Amino acid sequence: MPIMKPPFESIPAVDLTDGFTPQMLKDGWGIGGYNEKRENMYTAPQYENRRNIHMGVDIWAPAGEPVFAPLEAVVAYTANHNQEGNYGGTVVLKHLVGGRTLYALYGHLSLRSLEKFGPGEDVEAGTVIGWLGDRNENGNWHPHLHYQLSYRDPGEADMPGVVEEKDREKALRIYPDPARILGELVSQR
Image 1 (cartoon, rainbow, N blue to C red):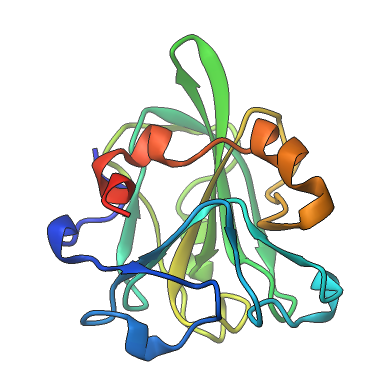
Image 2: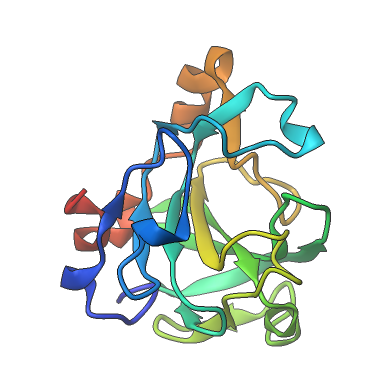
């Protein structure tokens, strides 16, 4: 089950090692990578000019595009992180994959996404869990979904989307490659 529903074969992989510009996207769509060192992107104070190793996958698409649960899940946490450069509307789902619990963060959603489900509610695979937010509600980012997995319960609707170089190896053990769930969508990178 896809997490978003464009014609996946036409979504370009976007190299963000030197930063982001909307011109990198094809018709507003693009995919940014996992474990990618990104210079000049994370300038908000909370990043301290040191956190720049990306621990999720970004899928750029127009604001308002629906986001789907790729697997059966339970809503673990929801929050609005409205600080500049943060996630904005955020939902964390709890999945059982191969007998192991896996948490999935969906960041940069619209605020109306937070009204759709509450913690503890069951979500079927293929259900719309939210919509991409615009700059006014997604932390002031170009519209996109930040999708990140965690083997650890984050305890809240938050995970460090980028980490410092010194923390990279530890983070890679906690936050696995989203290709595990997204498969073909990101394997083309």
